[in-house]
Length: 169
Image 1 (cartoon, helix red, strand yellow):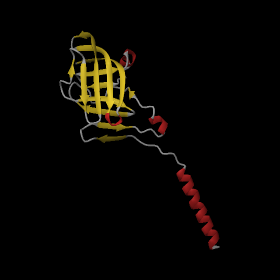
Image 2 (cartoon, one colour):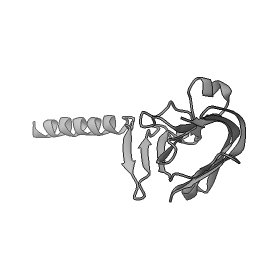
Image 3 (cartoon, helix red, strand yellow):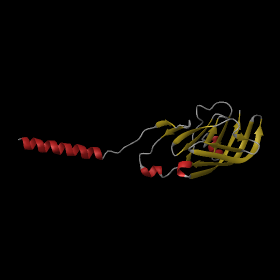
Image 4 (tube, helix red, strand yellow):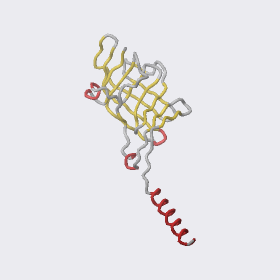
């Protein structure tokens, strides 16, 4: 009788281990802070093939950005739909969304030169640069077209996209 109970116990244990090992793993959102004040919000893909399709992604205006700011989309249609690839608040922080991560990079006032439309921001993980030309100006708002380049230092990977947007108050 003891051998029958032992066999059923081992069979149950084996079934439990087998069932548990077939379970798919999903990850959840997380927020991390790096040592240089860069904040990253992670949305980890559950499947490895999703990670291979990495890119600069559009996002709505961050709630933290109010008042004077710069915001750029890939094109005029995305701009009109308020889906941006770059947003900054004129001197404190810049935002991009890369590979499912919302990245906040500290900046200093004066990082932007509207006369020749150039901007370079850098921290220990990323280098963001924009260049282009002013297309129009009204009151306190200037429209621009140009190019955004993001260097991901640890991967030595560069992503470049055209941009269309404005800076103003």
